[in-house]
Image 1 (cartoon, rainbow, N blue to C red):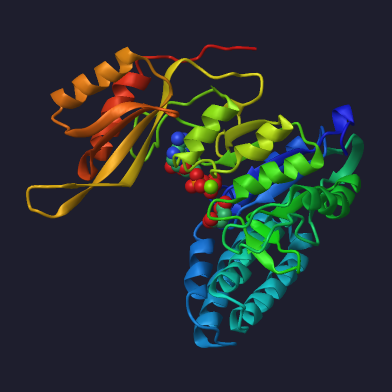
Image 2: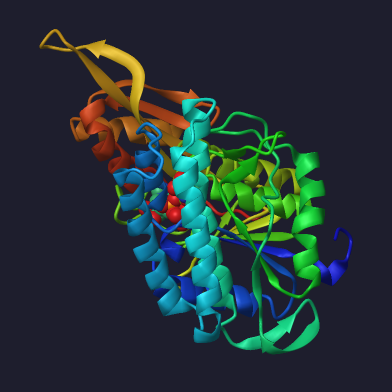
Length: 415
Ligand code: ADP
Ligand code: ASP
Ligand code: MG
């Protein structure tokens, strides 16, 4: 597909909350079908929220073919996915999608009862079903959205969604955090994804899932669907990948810890890679590697507010000035003696960007004033680092966000 100017496939990834219910899947399907009116679209889908945890919980038990635990798991998953089908898939396609989902659940029970070569192989062999199941529901739901045009061809009927028949991402045999083989993946995408796009359908790819050279299922690590999206984008020659989640984009701090965290409209690859590497959960830590390599734009957007512009991460933005965003690393392995004689843990706040000496001084002054004891402060490659007592990490994060990030708009566009 590479080199065809207006036919570059768009890759859209939907996270767990974005496919967390029938209503959410309906929205996701409408976004995918809407985008497919202008160009070929491949959708990468996460498991419905909570499903991966459920599957991994089951995988920690011993294989027990057809046992009570496996049957209970089957029932829970059947109930959740069949309800979503009922809510999101048009009536004429429901029976077919239900059959596919029930077939996958039979395969899951079988996989759960089979001995595996290792604990990690067993966990991967079970976890992959979360994405396989949600992919079927989303593909079925695409057909229920408004009619449009796909790949330039007028489609009078609704846009079709098709799950790719074979997992396109080739990996090594590290079952829980597999390494992607880019060349092999490109070949597999040409064989299994491109034909679906050429048929004019939205190609739905289960995220998080890979295949080892011997065909065994592997996973890309928790949160790995983001990486699946940029890996597929690179293999298809895409110019743009959308990461659709439940927040407006990449915020300048974790919104669960910092209520006034603000949207970052632009990020450089380097900034996004650093932030993700320091734990910004919105992006899996390896997501930016294929994106930067292929110079693709990555847009992080909100499935539940698709009209908002989100965050654009691209090659034409060299990064902002000053402190751009803050990340908290807990349990930093620098333990210090404390009054009780026990050793207490530390936390580290990293102020990412290009901070100045004045930022460091201001940060230290404010920490002292707030009586937050710091054990170390200084410059590091990511920006400014403040190491504090473990139980004061969140306070330090909020304080430094309020004083160093909010004070500095930090956007200096460099073409
Ligand atoms: P998805 O299932 O869509 O991949 P995740 O839960 O993996 O969603 O990531 C999205 C969540 O990441 C948000 O709901 C938010 O709570 C959290 N998050 C942590 N840090 C950030 C940040 N800097 N910007 C945006 N969201 C963040
Ligand atoms: N479903 C997987 C997880 O929960 C992958 C993902 O959501 O990106 O980790
Ligand atoms: Mg995620």
